[in-house]
Image 1 (tube, one colour):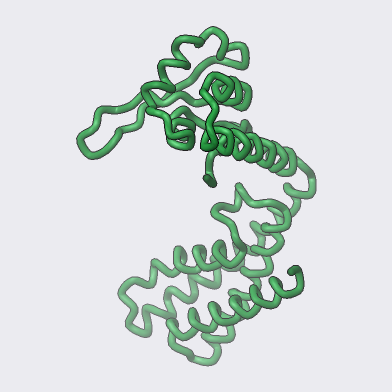
Image 2 (cartoon, rainbow, N blue to C red):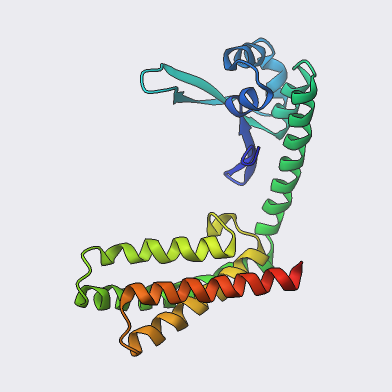
Length: 218
């Protein structure tokens, strides 16, 4: 049940579709509840919605965007069973974690860490630009994809999906990961290694680092 709550304009939100799926209710039934008690829902803010297409030929469904107050009020209107109770607990937990992250993201520590990470990222981008030309010279037809390839590798090893959704700890890990990538790429080009071998070296180095980090924190 990961991903029940996300950030939108610095607010933690979920939606009626996620709640319907998580509680194993029909979405139209959840929509009816929201419409029936719409005035109550608006005690916590204006009810917003979007339209999502359901299936290849399905009609767009009206999906309500719910803030924490609205989502928790909706949960009180659903009949309890084991599935619903477990979902309620998970939803509350994810809202709490997301609010903690939003507060962290507004802290000086997060802003400073993010700024320092951007400097490392700029250096990495410059080095990968050199690697792109290096790979072209070795016959690569898709060397421009190396930017995405190395970004995905760095994010995966640091355990993040997006820099803007990373904690201070994750940003520090990402900075360390990108520093290692820079070092290995530069060594590889200096040693005239094939660009694919350079990537393999990066992956091996990072997997070793990840394994060591896990053992030290376990």
